[in-house]
Image 1 (cartoon, rainbow, N blue to C red):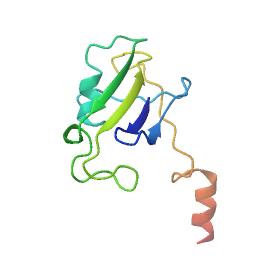
Image 2 (cartoon, helix red, strand yellow):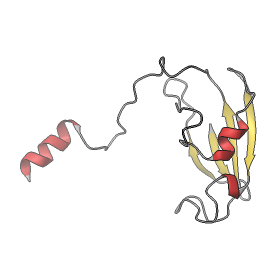
Image 3 (cartoon, helix red, strand yellow):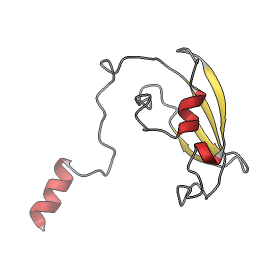
Image 4 (cartoon, rainbow, N blue to C red):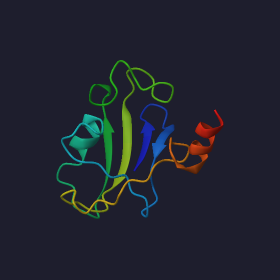
Length: 110
């Protein structure tokens, strides 16, 4: 997917590597409502443009600093696959996240 501000077309988020897809569970509030609603009826392999009004996105609060308050969102999505969650790949920790050898060294040095 690629996420942009609808008014300015400025990209604020994206995940386009098919080897590291964005995985989430429907109905668990892991994504904004407009994104989830926009996926309804989309089959695996399908692509869709989703325009999400602010009320179904980040609302009046926004998601500063990247998404201003009251911003409509525009998603470009390709649905790679649909599963029941049991076949989801294990999530790897993001670079710089706590844990690993580097963090252990820092803790030991402190």
